[in-house]
Length: 567
Image (cartoon, rainbow, N blue to C red; front, side, top):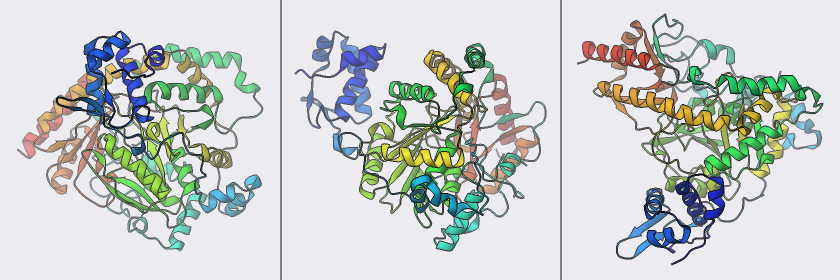
């Protein structure tokens, strides 16, 4: 049996034949060119047609089987198992307008004057919220274990919000507060001093301490010379000074470079015109919430999950709805919600990867409900095992997914650049919202330098190198943490820069263990803050910034404390 797939096209894009064959088959299946139930050629036949080895074809078939695209039937052959209509319909993305919030509709009026009049007197001004997961809380006195007094059980929101208040006056109050402190800077000053560590956050780590923080990256391996060349070229040319008008969507050269990178690495058919540059992914999340969510609207968030999304939903007047997470990520439900925030590539904080079937269910839900999905691609660039599944954005056929990413992990945290790949119908509303708070895009020199860095190939080389560096550290930490198996239930993880574990004992025992480790100079991120409605204690151990010696020393201290105190 012969089939026609765009193998030659993908062979020009990807140097490895297995990748080219995988992409060609997968795209033919997803786009409906190979229909569900169609029989595929045998590995021998396909190898002969395209002049490749049979073993390579078998390897690709095995990957597609593991991901649910095809299935083998003993004695009959290999068949397509995936239906193209499973992913919220077929064909190109729909241009059907999305339902905006009242604020979003006012913003779309000629001149956007309605939105400005609404905010006069509220003290609204432009600002941008940092997207680092280490800055989950704002201020206040802390309870033992790092939970702020006045917060609902590690929720990251005020008690009124945590209780699910739907009253219009509560939503209006939250909205007014959000406008007084616009998307991107809610309680920024307080959050800097109130990071939730395993011990008293106000006690600085002393010399020799080991801090398993989430935001750290390995600066020693950063390609400084290549990056400096790109920056210096921008300084020498001063081209960014010659542009009297600055597009609030960001520099077009960077948007084009991001679109190309996503097409190659994530199978996202991104159009540069649908890409917006933001000051960290949290700005994109907050602006989208404000555009789409009004008072009383339900917003689905993962639990445990990123509390920054919870705060953004509440600030827009929405009501956060907790969606349970298991070992495979979020559990789809028939929610009555306007919007869903999800981290399918690597669930934050547990690290679970959402399987293809659940991704399809989420897309069907969004289509049926007329809802929008914010897909946060946080911490997925560095994968140490397995093949990443396609993002929701790559499977979206209805224009329901907004894909958000950041360079804070792949480059360095101080580079406040992220991006959003928008549905076509949301491009202009998002552009106006960003211009409303930030009339002139910031960091133009850095944007153009990053575009040059990516176009030169230096960015991809950097990612490949760091994948090896971080992979070695991840393996070392994973191996060492087995000594803590009596105390923690570790979540499997094939990517990212932290390891997540559930504490097997009670909350008081966890606090005592954390406090004793802190006394000996070892700190980590208390993951309990990511569970809004209580639950088991948990911890996140970030390792990107640590040396092998520091990782070993930290594990030794924790093992010693566990042995002396609990075993």
